[in-house]
Image 1 (tube, rainbow, N blue to C red):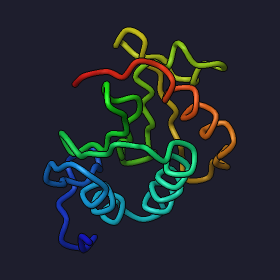
Image 2 (tube, one colour):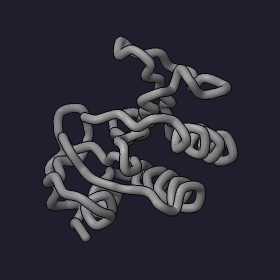
Image 3 (spheres, one colour):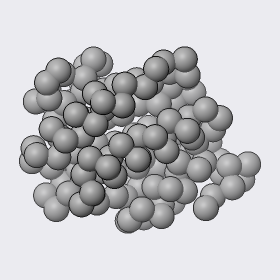
Image 4 (cartoon, rainbow, N blue to C red):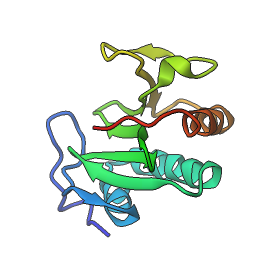
Length: 137
């Protein structure tokens, strides 16, 4: 596990974690998320594990990725004021995640410190996203 006090944060507030495949680098990233964000990261990871047990995980570009055999369907990124979930095929989800992207098909959910985490909605998006074709990065 990564010691939060020794992990460098990028200027965005995101932990700088070495790339790697599997659960261990994702758990290191979550442990290194500063303050309240680590709890959110852990809760998101639990939601994904519960709703898609066959999940493939990796950290690339200091970003935890969640996917399956044919590619990635979700990512998490830590900013100074919020945690962002990226749904690679978010425009195909119902309801569509609220934040648009310049990347075709991608939608975001930004989670701020005082937000109540809508675990049921996130779980539903994970279930839907896991049935769509993955995205190669």
